[in-house]
Length: 236
Image 1 (cartoon, rainbow, N blue to C red):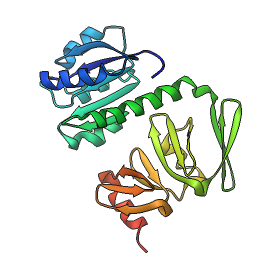
Image 2 (image 1 turned 90 degrees about the vertical axis):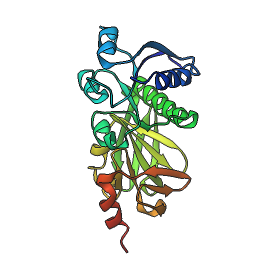
Image 3 (image 1 turned 60 degrees about the horizontal axis):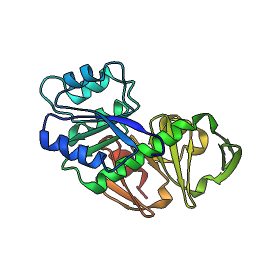
């Protein structure tokens, strides 16, 4: 991240708190605002200084990380780090930017930070993002330039809260529209929603399993609520 961001870490397990803290400290552009053992302590400690990022455990005594998120929806980037994958759907419904299942590893945390960086970059230039469709062609305004993309070149779409990343055969672009709303547009009606955060074009699926699909060189997760949709779409 080029701009200094602030973060908090909330986990009732001391080792897990220290693990997240050690990973965050590898990113000089992220300033740790506070480290807390409970959501109650965190809310009191935050006061009026809302952080840019919160790394939250889910299952904690008293108030859960999910409940804390409900009380602090103004935090832009929420990352749930938990031993319980069953809360993932609810976590993403609360606009989590990422959901990591413990044990937390350096590679997985690095991918999380890439998502956060992409989100903050988009947020900073949101006013410059726009798009419109023309037949099978997508025109994306990026700053003062307009990029032309053929829809058949789009491999998959990735949700970044209010934005959507469009990954094509030649690069990555972003538009200021949620994934759900983008899929309502006529040109994207043939995309297969495989997860709350992902939609793919059938032609680029190389392998499909119960929990993930491979599209080109990327492995994308399959959400439980979308398994049947994917299976039906892949029927000959």
